[in-house]
Image (cartoon, rainbow, N blue to C red; front, side, top):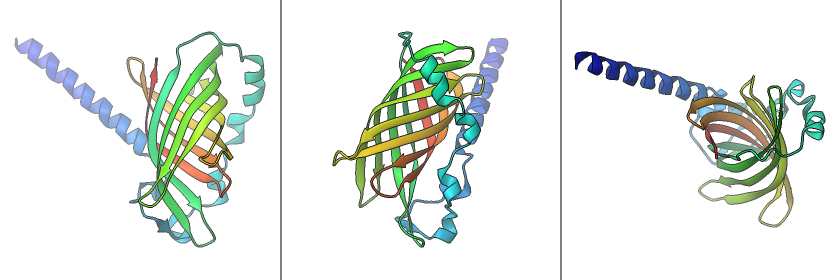
Length: 210
């Protein structure tokens, strides 16, 4: 009985440590992303520059080439992902607006080569909201790439806003195994609309293999 109780305590301790490690990983974002939400913040307090709206070109160098060669479906299970975070949009040189953002997407997997899996379609929605604003952007199609050796995914998708104007979504995501078929992830995305683009910092994400 004593040995059994000891094992239970050990397992519980490991679960607590793993949960703390995941939480620490998901929260590690730029300083301005962790501040309380407000309707507007100044350029100096946010430090939001053009560099925030760019990605590492090295990560995307072979993106299109790989997908063009490896786009055949393998009828794998889809991945559903849900994430919450913050959206930032520059209004002018002095004003940056901050919103809550929720991302819901379904990824249809394609073929696998070495440590890379193609995503042959992306559907879902991006909801951007505040106390005075709410907009839902529908994602109708897209493609992507999962690099299992790096625990990373790249996504390009297209959709429309409520007025049927075209929008595009480009995202880089880091993920880690959470248990079973569930993965925790965080990421950065750019949502381009008819207005100024939005920087999305996805802080609390969970993806599940269906």
